[in-house]
Each structure stands twice: as structure tokens, then as C-alpha cells.
Length: 73
Image 1 (spheres, rainbow, N blue to C red):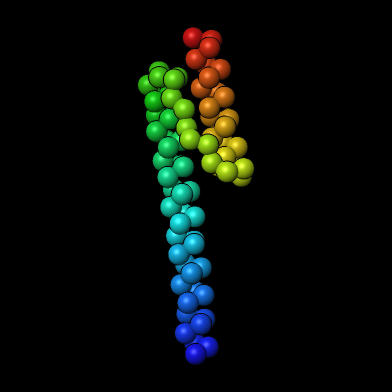
Image 2 (cartoon, helix red, strand yellow):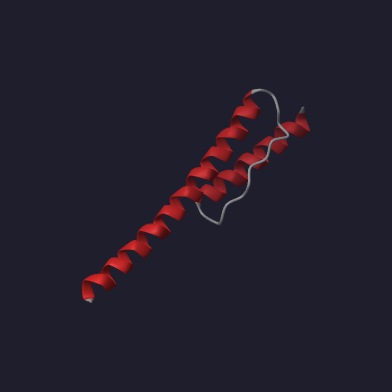
């Protein structure tokens, strides 16, 4: 019974980690898409903001950078 309980806890943790890393990967892909568009001269691109963490800070900074360049162009 204890082994079953521990297995369920482990499975739950693995599922939660999978979801977290999937979201992380999606956020990085979105920022990569935005940077590629900016490199091609399209400064209208924006990235989806993520929660308040370092990745979210990077997304906000990219959006501000893109907006600032777009205003100056």
C-alpha cells in the first residue's frame, strides 16, 4: 500500500514537472520567434508574457526593446 502511495506521489510530481518544462519551452520558442522577426526588421512582434520570474522579466524586456526600436524607426 505504501509503495502504491509513493508511486502516485512520484507520478504526480513528474506530471507537474512535465507541464512546467513544457510551458518553459513554449515561452523560449515564442521569444526566439520574436527575436528572429526583429532580426528581419519586423519590430511589431511581441512575446506572450509569462509569470513573474526571470523568463517573464526577459519577455517584458524584449517587448520593451521591440517597442522602443519601433518608435524610433
